[in-house]
Image: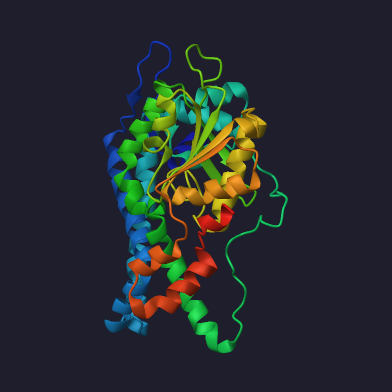
Length: 380
């Protein structure tokens, strides 16, 4: 009975990686599981999309009279029905998984790893590609102590200076936490994650099966969990640059599975890729402070766990990935190189270009408060 409950609660399984002479293969769910998964995925996507477009949806609901007593009751009935459908689909999916020997074999390995994340259990778990929220953390960054006055969050989230500015600050908060951050980091949206799910699975399979990549979850000091992939080229014959580690920071819709890792891998470097908070297997929201904690945890993982010294680490960033990369360079000044590709000096001009002119003051306040990605300032 306990395993049936675990099957209901368990993560999605995507692939069983190649092991020895056994070829890797995609996991094939039974009809009950696959059908229920579609229902669950659709409901989750609609919820995420409605959250993204909430200002527009609230306006539509208001104009159509859904904020009356009768309208609220009808909305309550609707959400109750959707909720019942969701939980019923979870139950059906769990039953389908329970009847699938491949999933139950994976679930047994996962449960053992969650109880004791030993080297043996971790090796067994690394034979599967699955929804990464269920994976135990391998390395935890316990604090956030880096010296120097330049080390500080780039957000200015102080209280409004006057009561007259309070409405603007409230509107700024709403904009930043609904469509604002999703425009800046579309890779953290359910839409993009759904569209790229198959390429991400294929990318991870290539990194693990062909390049012996080691996927690991790294915990940040602020409680997020960062999905990483490490390809070790140290000591390999013919790999002249294997002793150097390239830490890759992706763009606003980039993922390590299909992103910048490919270039340094072709050149023979050891490579560590990671996904921004909220991207693929990483948790959190890609606000500047969480980006700082993420890259700091990744750097500490590279130094403390993987055994690279800062002078053998190269920071390589694409587009908006220049923000965490330059923050890392500012706080780890002994790194060997910093390579920025197609990045920007400051996000403010880009934000102005995407928004109407009448919203200029709101845009400036929102960027300064919540999305101040001033890369040039971190290079001083």
